[in-house]
Image (cartoon, rainbow, N blue to C red; front, side, top):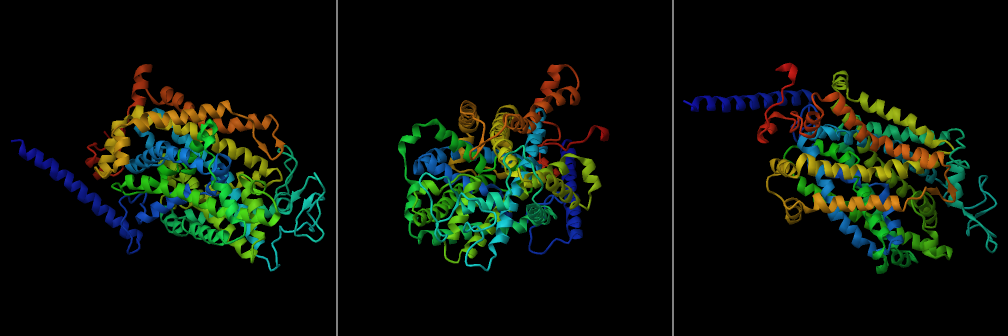
Amino acid sequence: MMAQPLLSVKDELKTKQDELKTKQDIELRERGQAEGETEDENVERGNWSRKAEFILSCLGYAVGLGNLWRFPYLCFSNGGGAFLIPYVIMLFFVGMPVFLLELTLGQYASQGCIGVWKCCPLFKGIGYAMVILSSLVAIYYNVVMCWAVYFTFASFTALPSLPWVGCMNDWNTETCYDDRDVNATIGENATVTSASDEYFSIYTLEKSKGIDDTGPVVWKLALCLLLAWVIVFFTLVKGVKSVGKVVYFTATFPYLVLLILLIRGVTLPGASEGIKFYMMPQWERLGNAKVWKDAATQIFFSLSAANGGLHVVASYNKFHNNVYLDASIIPLMNCGTSVFAGFAIFSVLGFMAHETGKEVKDVVESGIGLTFIAYPEALSRLPISPLWAVLFFIMLITLGVGSLVVYVETTITSLHDEFEVIRRLLKGRRWILPLVVCSLFYLLGLLHVTQSGIYWLALQDNYAAGVSVVFIGLIELLAVTYIYGFRNLIQNIKTMVGERSRLYWMSMYFTGIIPMFIAPFLITFVLIFYFIDYKPITLGSYEYPRWADPGIAWLMVMASVGAIFFYMVYHIILREQGPILKRLRNSLNPHPQWGPMLEQHRIEAGISRYVPTEEK
């Protein structure tokens, strides 16, 4: 008597799946999807056409300008080769667990960094914090890219040398010194500035005396910034499909240029001294807590975790994509790129030290100074210097595009997924949203191309994308492993990929020791040490006024981190009903809509179809 009803249920489910598949096929044909590409599972949102597109997008997002300027500097300033020990430890115990966690949530729910928090509605503010953070980063990150665009144009010169060579130009000051100038002399204990420094600071940026001396917009940079945003817009115009095509170039070209620079660099006189300085181990430094703090911080930033972008790129994966494999390959390739880039950079800086008669430590600068002052000067000393300069700055642009498109797509995807009114307005015209976002970010970025722009950029880089990322990452890790539940996360992974885990992932996730205890402990250690060691930032010898740091600086931090706690209060008071304990309990349990987006995958996960209250 029971067989017939059970059979009917199975038949009904099969019929629903067949109807859904037929509907998807029709919509795919209407879109005219190109032959040879894998069909989309999710017609509304789209999927990566090929596995390689996802890998390259993740790699392009994680491998950014920081790999080029930040890691090599941290390495030689924190014990050389010895720094690799805490760096690798932090990779396995902090970086890879958070990386897998974010890929899992995004792929399982096919949602961006806001939508995934249906798994624990009280912490949905983490998603908003990530969107705010990604937006703040995108605004200033593209300014760095616009500098690279400007230097690329400047490098196309018919002169025997590059425009930042020599001190005989109109913008040079009396303190400018370049040993290649005829009759160049320098007095004992004299304060001098390099020709490349003055070209960047005085001619390119038209740098003012401080953050409170705003000055006018530097229009040559404003035009380069406009071009940079146009590039980003056309990369994003067709969503995941256009991004997937562009990353074949943006994620691979930097490796080609770095390889060329490395081959050329190691053949130059003095290169061995630069590499020795970069990797010479100072084992005694391992006892310094700051070294371990810097290693953990660099892993977090290098992998671009807690920015929301990993959720977004994973949300376009097919449901059964092997996240174990992705979370193994991408972090290792990213960190390998950092080490590899260091050899390419320091071999050339060793040559520069040899040419100028200085020690390597005297020609190395951190951050922006390494990219736009020290390294351009080193390039100017190479034979056929314009060629090397063009290659280097085009590489910077491709690195910037690879990271920037994911930062911007994080904002776009989150707005599209979260607000139904936007989806209704943009149906069939999704390109309007990238246009609006890119235009808005361009206007907001104009502050950074005023004469005080570099002061604002340094402030934003240190605070908006600094401690905020680590703090958001800690709350995310605790919310997922303890509130949503470590076992639930494991079950989500099993639903998608089965038991295809390797030894590392088995030891980490089937014991839970690393994601539940070791990783939170290490991140907490980083935050505690950061506040103990806290000092207001400086830009060279310039000290920020107190209204800027800590004033505006910590407002930037609270703009993202504060969203987490603001949303908690908002959700409990306005989104839930009943006594306070019931509201809190409901907020900590998964929303009925949580789970895979497509019905056939919800059936696989054993989750019934979500029916909104108004449809019941």
